[in-house]
Length: 488
Image 1 (cartoon, rainbow, N blue to C red):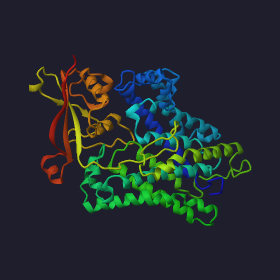
Image 2: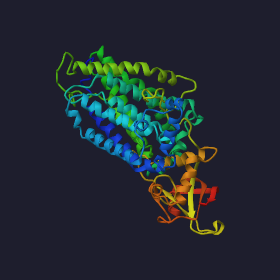
Image 3: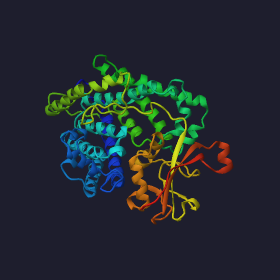
Image 4: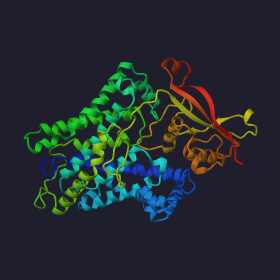
């Protein structure tokens, strides 16, 4: 580092800008494919109803994060236009085209992505309540100030990415230490691979590893999240200490974070959470001579004066807005995935403070028979969540299957959520946008006469059960929890 300019972090900037833009592309594509059925004009939780409710009372307006749809009436068509615009802008940044121009050009485009996606998240309700939504928003805001190819990235912005990565990892580590006993007695990962929201194709193999390996996994997790994040800031010592050692310490810290996240990508489906962490992890990897620039415009190393003023202002802004997040990291009642301001900057992150020991799945069934007591019930298959016991879980991340994720949360509550009741009604209506969210409609577009929800306890099949019966899952404890329901 050279004081104001992070001259050795040109490659890191390339990964950050292109990687974050790629995740925005995935996020807008996911929204384009799913929002209409989930929260559109006739969705399970219609966004227009939320906006009307907010508009009815002045004091409610502060409850909503900024969104374009408070000023432009929401329609499904307008949402689609926003998504296509976001996909096009994100694709141009992935290709690196705006980065060939002046630094204000990628800044404007990243801020457009940030505001556009915040407009979606603000009205997405429970379907957009995941921690990685605010992570993507914050990363997109910071990426706006990384600059262009003709100057080195500003040191202050690179450091802000380290601060984001620190909150992301250390916050998650503290949540676990303060959470369930399973993280302290090193047994958490004896359950997690099996009970996580959406297992991947290798989750069963990971679950069947020896118990001592699962204990090593937990120890490695604690080391990566509670110790390593402090070393991310080691390159700052190069401002006072000559030599490459401080920068290499930071690079090793970033490499450890990346390695642990790759393991999570291999063994699970956490939308773009792990992918975003991997991309942000590259902010700690400075490579002298790779991606660096020798431009010397202005009085500082390659950085125009106006750009220096803008990035320093962003740094000062973060000093102010980060204080609640700092307090939260060391609070006895630490908040997880919390935003402390309307613009969702300097957030608190964390996940899986406790690990569920048993997996309960809700299976939705329908029938065309008139008598539900003597009916032939057929299952609706979801794209990602477990259903058919013989089906291998697929890898969907970084794509986000929002309905499948919400189905995992249903058994954890004391009652079924309101959106699920509407979901059952849409199935009875054979609503095409809703059916498009599923892997298989057993009635091929025909309306079922009855629909019901049945819960099972699922567990991964042992190797012997897999050889004998050809199953990946074993399910027991069948119980009808809703229905049979029919349209009146």
